[in-house]
Structures are given as C-alpha cells and as structure tokens.
Length: 255
Ligand SMILES: Cc1cc2nc3c(=O)[nH]c(=O)nc-3n(C[C@H](O)[C@H](O)[C@H](O)COP(=O)(O)O)c2cc1C
Image 1 (cartoon, protein in one colour):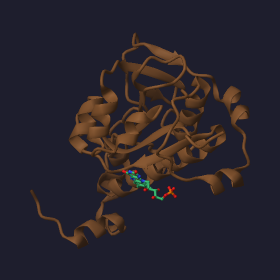
Image 2: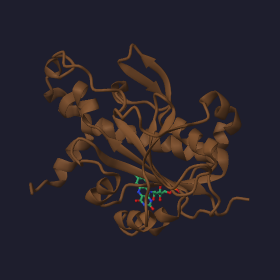
Image 3: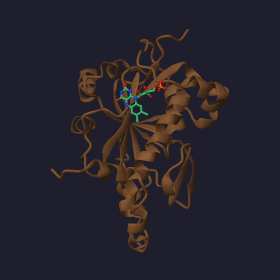
Image 4: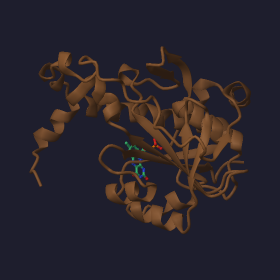
C-alpha cells in the first residue's frame, strides 16, 4: 500500500488541487452525459409512499434557535419506534428535493458543491412504525422509500462493523450516506473528494437539527470498517461506498 505522509493527508483539506485540474477537460465540459440525479432502481421494486413535505413540515416546527442550542450527540435511545412521518421528515430534512433544474441538477434542503449531490441515503430500519425491519433507500426525487432487503441479526453485525460501537444496534434507524463519486467527478474531476466530504457534514447537521423537532437523538459515526459496512449494504466499494453514518432514535432522557 502507498505510504502517505501527514502532509499528504493535510493536502486533501486544502484547495491546491483546483489549480491543477484542467476544468476544460472534465467529463462535463467534454460533453459526456451527466450521470443520473438518483441511482436507478427497477421500476417494479417495492416502494413505500412517505407523507409529503407539505404535510410533515408543519408538524415539526420548532424555534430554530432552540434546535441549534439543544443539538448534541445522543447514544442512548428508548425502545419507542419512530413514527413514519418522523422518518419522512428526517429524510426530507437531509436530502429532500426543493427543485429539479432543467433535469440537470437538484436543489435540496442541504447545499452541495455545484449542486451535484453525490450521495444516496440508505436506511437500516429497526423500529419505525408501519415499516418492516430491513434496509431501504430513500428516493429523493419521488420522496419514497425503496425496500431493498430484510435483515437478520443486523444490529449485531452493524455494531461490529462500526468497530463495536454497540449503541448503533439500539437505534430505531441508522442512516448511511454512500457517495457515488462520479456524480461529483463528472464536473470537478480530481477536485471532488474534499467537497464530497464537506457535503456529508451538511447532511448530518440537518439530521441533528431535524431530530430536535421530535424528541429524537442522533449520533454521527465516522469510525467504521469500510469493507464491512459496504458489504452489509451490498455496495461495490469502488463507485459507491459509505462515507458517513448516523444513528437515530427517541432520546432516552426525553419526557
Ligand atoms: C465527523 C464526525 C464523526 C463522528 N464519529 C463518531 C463515532 O464514530 N462514534 C461516536 O460515538 N461519535 C462520533 N461523533 C460524535 C462526536 O463524538 C461528538 O459530536 C462530539 O463528542 C461532540 O459532542 P456533541 O455532538 O454532543 O456536541 C462524530 C462526530 C463527527 C462530527
């Protein structure tokens, strides 16, 4: 394996790469068709309607200042399931689409470099009303859930893949943000990795804040076994791989 130095890793945080990329040669500028805004799925796949944004937004209005002030990481959850409208709100808050622009890009509830939105959201549902336990994918364009597969013994496997962070297996649901890097590289080529990582932070922050509207708690997770987590979700680990996770559930200390 290549030996990287501390300076190599720090380089990633800086923006020198922008001066090195010939942006006239990116796939976008060479006229290569843009990748799909959302990962395709079989049209006959099982899909679950979610309560629409106009219905759920009014149910979760809390003062923004209070939500920001209260935000903290929670690693202890009750056994109370999340309601479907609560999960719908969390999904909409993290990746909901505000506008599709000329079928070329989406504007969402979170910002993204160049509006490329290179993430897909996978969800492990352990305890959400009206949903069977299993792995789902959020379809932001449709605001629906795509059922992927049922799970067995998943909390244990998931906790193990999160380097034995056992609280993950007790969450009502776990969000996995998987990057499809080409969605960003199509436009930014080698200058994509940093902005993908920055985008992930915005997504998770919205999850933290949205959870404050429903007595739910969230904990971000960036310590995990890459191959183990990708394998649990059936991702190829090359063109699609998990970058960030978060556990969510009703706060143990909530009234
Ligand atoms: C990028 C990132 C990665 C994190 N990874 C983990 C993790 O793997 N496990 C964990 O228990 N907490 C994790 N956290 C939560 C932090 O430990 C937490 O944000 C920090 O201790 C500050 O506490 P607060 O969020 O309550 O303010 C992570 C937070 C961030 C922002």
